[in-house]
Image (tube, rainbow, N blue to C red):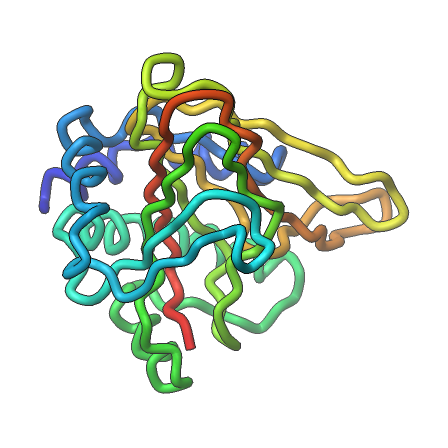
Length: 236
């Protein structure tokens, strides 16, 4: 999937890094074609592609459903994961340097996943989420074990206004000794939002501090909404 890698390489990574530093989220612009979005959505009913299915209401996560892919990942999903990882690892390492965290992420996804697998985190985490009218996703963090990669991406696979209404992507940031801040991210079909899994560094008047972030999806008012989540650590 060299074309996917070329698209990812062609993104404005300076702007993405600056937006992540300033707001805690950055959009890519449309990265997947409408046909690629439809092809990914069409995989959802195919049980052979997925290792597990989660009904959100059963666990108090909200309303809706999501399915985790099994290995081997579909070509497009694997290509997105492999090509996003090196760029995000560079950002993650810069964040770790600013906070004094000794953690360093390897340059290649395979090397990072090998660390996850040695620690017993062997289950793939890329997933597709499906929402219908009235469905929503509670604010949460995607932590699946001791080894956590600090950034992830979510791709909107449906057309806003045509396939669904409502269902906005929402981030909240819990700042020390301050009220929480909310960020609503509007996406086009095929576009991704890149955001922190857990915490991010923020420059304060007394130096760098880390804020906790959570993400979710507001209530869908009509239609059906599909999202592809690219999480870069595997699960225990």
